Length: 462
Ligand code: ARG
Figure (cartoon, rainbow, N blue to C red):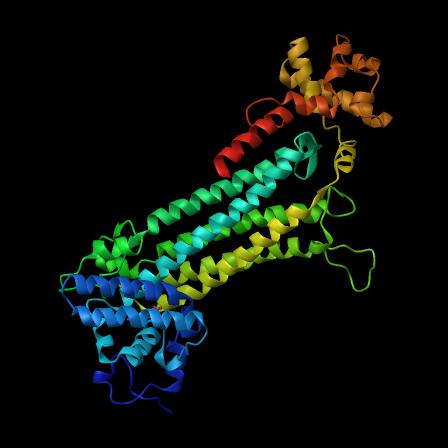
């Protein structure tokens, strides 16, 4: 079975393409997502061709108007995307020819689908980065709000998921604000690096026509033309960098999701998700499951998969363009959709989440979270070397453990039985509130530091 020979390269082909060839070759099912960018690129290219006297002005006017009509048809859902026209570039151009006639054939002067697709895809990733930055900012704003509200709320800080030292819930939230802040700065770096115009590299070697690549760069919001024509059509670093960024974001979201899963369990009960972000069980009526958090955690796997797909697809390709590179789009589109959904779900969960401050305080009861404060007191008030203080503290913790008491409940005599010079001054440092309040170092968990950090975070990020 063969379809017609009505193809852009029809000149030297006698027979049509086999149906299977058409199927493996076509990318329109997914690259139609590049329609807006494709038309923007073609419009800029056409205006430049006319300005440079490469094509007649009357044809250029018709082309620009025709492209605008194609765009309208696409936006209105009236455009017929055809597999026999292979990809978005040929679909748009073929429809343009139907609308304006043979003059449409002048649009493809001094360019190739190779520089065209490189341009479209960069423009698409650039838009995606801008949306991503907005989404990350929104998530940060919710985290900062919790940080402000919970600047004084004590909770166990963990290492090895064992109670380590008391921190505040606000401080914990701000840790994620930093992570997502770094992600935003990575997005900005990625954007700055990709923002160069490949259009005009043509198939791979540049073009003999007197084109103006600076003009198309400016029209498309690029900072400058790319330097090397071979690199322009064969570089997909920007897509890989974008996917690395999405992987990092997914990893951060997954860690946060894991905390939500732990925190919503009955054993922890630190927070409660809203009904809107919980699911029930069909058999156990008491259940409130954190499905959204679990799915955010799970979906990180897909995003990592997309990154590995692209790295693997690119790693053996000789210069310049190879058709392999058509496979760059689906992983990027899929990962972008996934991360956008995960960001929305996480922001939604956090926005409606309530914090159980009493439960957070209660969970500090076990595990002697102020033991480090006791050791620090021995160093600061009695001049003891830290290693010895660590040892003395261990012996005191053992007594408290045997008696089933917290350190701030233990009688002074028990402290003195381990080390006689200990006096009642020690009692002031053993409560969790004293512990967090003491951690006033820059970036520390003291409520005053958290409030100052919230103010800085608003300045830096919102
Ligand atoms: N659909 C193609 C892609 O996405 C466009 C470039 C085709 N170039 C070519 N020489 N066949 O990569």
